[in-house]
Length: 155
Image (cartoon, rainbow, N blue to C red):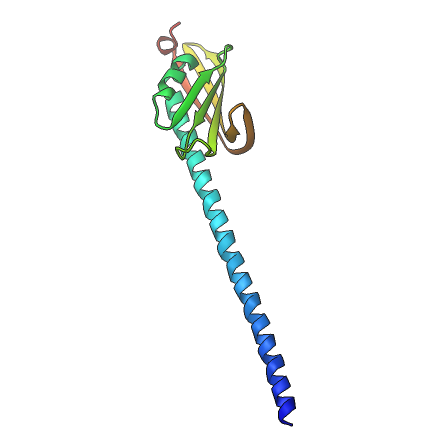
């Protein structure tokens, strides 16, 4: 009789131990998922701030070559280059200061529409994770526009 109680106690103890292990695994997965979501949210927040900074700078200058010069002076900007056609600007932001860190590439596409006394400019700003020369995984997209008078455009 005592032997049956001992076996039942051992089986019950083993069952509780397995249940405890499963609970620990589930709690660990919740914390890991929480950490991953926190990192994703921080990266998205950085991307939004970079797109907004780019949009603010773009609203101050009609000429993309001059805009590239202004943006090069901003914090954490590694490079800013306008293409020859004058309708695209590529910017690389360094976010963590580490050479092996993951950088953000911001691409500003500009289109213009002539108006009676000036030009209406529409900018599409896209933020990507990037490795130099490669864009992958668009994080954020922002559309903005501004009217430039003939005096601001220089015509």
